[in-house]
Image (cartoon, rainbow, N blue to C red; front, side, top):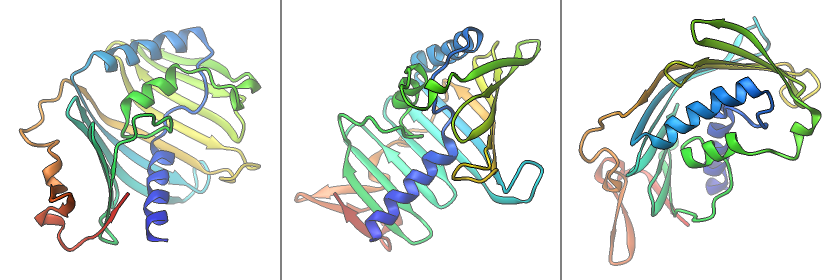
Length: 238
């Protein structure tokens, strides 16, 4: 049950950080997002900070609030949302629940097709893909405004989402804001999710050892050993 909880918490991270779960149809929007993806592909490192807010309804009371960070380089990726932290390298994936003091260590999956907020390759693959499920409802994209390259797009026609909005800086190839107005008929009953990208930085110079797995664990005699800073956490291994 404890392992299941950790995995469910990872899914919650994915839910709040997901940027697009449907295919890109509008040509202008496709071109702008392709430019962002291209720069992400060529960047040696990326650092993002996202202000996450969830409301009972648009203009209603806030039911969830947190700040998430995602740091990526060729050495690994570290993502934090609230008390949950995820680390991914070429060999291992670590999920940490700091509130309940639990840590799950597993070998990285070579063929991981699930979207993950901390797996930028999968994120970019998702944005490039043409989904065959919900998007067959013919999502409609509309350019709402263009203020000197700061473009706002509206998307409607997606199952369980009344409207999504994407704010892009097309001169710097960055995401600025994404919002979701969920439908009353869907699972989230009219909730409104707002993601503000307060930092979207390319070419970040991370400190030496920032992505070192030894921050989380080492392997001795074939056994995983938790790092000193996490030695009071309960370890799970898969």
